Image (cartoon, helix red, strand yellow):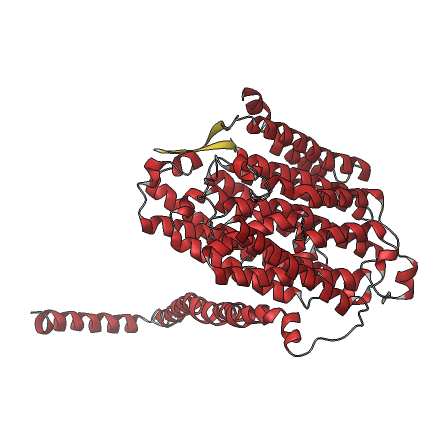
Length: 630
């Protein structure tokens, strides 16, 4: 393991170096050099991640300690990286998918000026560095540094086109809503320090330290950590920032929504599974909020017309599925879905970018149609992504979503029914998106139709690779019902995520559940085909209008939270600050000026006046001395 210790720090260091070179040299480097540096550093990190993964698979697990980051009295917080099964799996996802997105970006962003091109890639590199720091950290503080880093980078990337005011608002919204969750995460860290005097994973999750925590402590800490996760991973009520994050360039959307930022909350809870398994109340909260988020976002996606907004709400819904799995104790299923989701959601976002590229920036699917004839590679890869997210066997999404549905069925059949209905909505809105975009007649302008073309190789090759991964990616988690001694992912993660007993359903029941979900999903796809294959533009009415306007949640937040805060701020600045605070300060000054002016009148220069005042003063002294003093 000594070799791993010598090189493991290079995995996050290389993207950081890429960020510094491209950031500082953006005015001097060519686009080609920026592309090579930005993508090359991630590629080398990916290769190193594979090497580390092989070492860990062979049983070499270690915590790489570099120096004491904080040392105050008895509290020592080291800067250390934890190299184990869970962290190495996320390293592969982040660097692998991240590299493909970097390559894609070299073509997608080619019209940017070299200076802005360098700024873009420096932000991407910093984003990857922060995410690697988050998953490699051996304690909650190092994780929190990475946690804050991805929050900052999301702000920079969402508001990349900063000259558009609405994009800056979207970036600020993401940053502020994440701060709410981050505060809860920080309080949880302080709580652990107060109770245990440590934040290192190995020490916090040890039996001796867990015994020091009361049930109230464990419940409070896990709820606070979950609130932190709701911010990063966009769960109710902190999910509205994520659809607005579509303001950033499409590769940024793929990076945020697929492999990195939004999976941070899943990783944190999976890493803390020992604590969560001891907090049944928190587990129920996680499961029900995850289920509610999955259903709410799926209904909104049904009526969205912006190609990226559909995928954004799809991401919120899929994250809800992951939290449902976490709440049911199926931590491995949640991590499995993180992996498969990274493949097919990155594919779908990059595919949407290919469509937008061909349409000259158009994102409204109502103005598309018939694109399968001109964009054949994009269409085929997008179709594979839709099949995978819908959960059709043997594509990757089938195995991970089946594992989540099974965990819900074991916990509560009603919960399973709602989750299955949500999965059917997923299939419907994804194939609605596919058919409206790629089938029927072209509904755009004549100019757009003449310029329709397939994207260049730098964009289509990542699509093809992600499509292949979306097909075969699920095979690492084939359930035991299909293969005796199977489910290699559960076996691989078992040292970090303890198994929660055998399935409490028979193989025949499991086969029935798989058949039921697959049959219904296929039926939904067929229904979507007949409904949207020859789509004609129409406006939403009735309940459809409510869904198109996202249940008016943003308007509700504005009315209940944002506007009152703004009015309070206006009152404080214009009334309380000006009239009361400034009034008191200025009033003291005016009082002194007035008093000085009045006292000045006594200094008249007339000796008779001075004698009179002296006599009056003497009389007052005698009166006080002889008549008023006791």
